[in-house]
Amino acid sequence: MGDIAKFLKIEKTFQKYMCDIYADRNVKRSIGREGFLRELQDMSKLLEESQKKLLQLLERNRKEFPRFYFLSNDDLFEILGNSKDPSRVNKHIKKCFEGIKRLEFAPSSTAGSAAISGKGGKGSQEVFEVVTLVSPEGETVPLKTKVPCLYGIEKWLKEVEIKMVENLKNLIQ
Image 1 (spheres, one colour):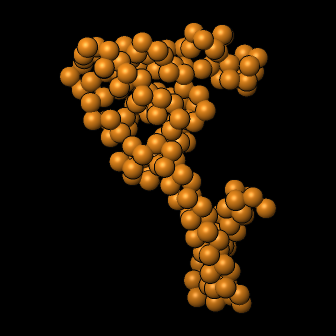
Image 2 (tube, rainbow, N blue to C red):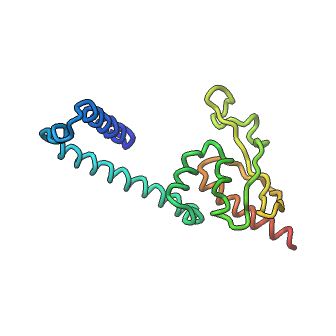
Image 3 (spheres, rainbow, N blue to C red):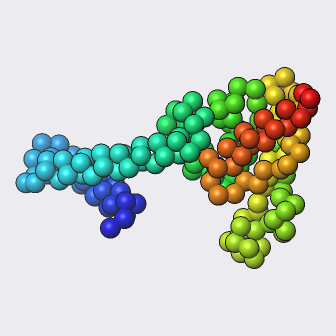
């Protein structure tokens, strides 16, 4: 059974218990049922295992892109959970890059008609690329080489960091 299936089973069981307790309206009788405490302890143990796996996932992402260490677990979960919408990273970008308030995106010109599935049909997702960095003061730095938002946020943000350094070196020289 996969991690998600385990979690859903725990959630369903817990909700059933809560509904039963609510329907009975007698807490002592509801929680005094044979084996109830043991089942709650087992669910708690499974939830702790799930939490441990989630924290390991966050650590892997932070190792891949160390600037994620500046984000709380909740912020990082939000970023990773919205990976299909790159613009959602802007809410947290200033925590990762002090001099960047937001990234500007455009539909990818190199991905053809821009479908991750490769067909552009139903179920496909338009591919975007980072085209400009915007500072808190409103200054813009257009990227000479656009960064496609593919293959995991930590990977393309790492590429944004590399392109940012390259562009700023070229602008200063």
